[in-house]
Image (cartoon, rainbow, N blue to C red):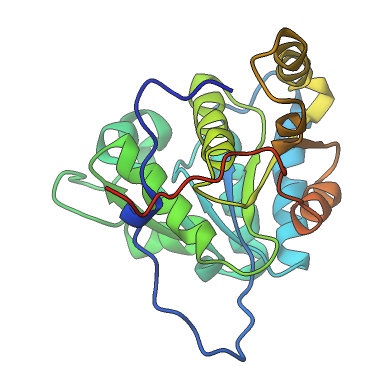
Length: 245
């Protein structure tokens, strides 16, 4: 699979929290990419609620793009209602607050605040405002890499941004930057075209056959959790040393 035009961030650049005691098993952390719109079918919003419910049942923490609209808002709001605000961390660039936060959820001055008000934290969890898109993705990836077994990346339905984020994490896996699962929650066949493209790229010789399995699909929320837990790294992905440079 071809790399994005902007080189991926070296693993050495990703800030990781301090290592916990050896006898501590950390809960999984899953990063979910999804749309800031609800979609035309109510099934998409229902899938976001179902995914949050599955996360709560399996003690999974969420890191996501920090929006309060559409699938993003529904996912965060549902998980907070089930597990509390500490289970959700949204990370959003200041420029996107105007389009990914509803009017009532916006901070009074996003250029001078690095978090959302406590009242909104009680609804959507902790939210951190960052400068740009690359910082957002780096911070989200750092939380996943620091999570326990079953951590990984999931894509619900979404648009260009969701696809770009999903493909970057898939490419990072191919390049050996991380070894976490990458799952598409394929609601009503939404991702069928992408999965067909992956197989066509294999047939055309642009993706090595074994690497087609870097990106896996799930048809329901419980299967998403299972696929992350059972994820196996491709033997054909690149084994590069990202500590150099």
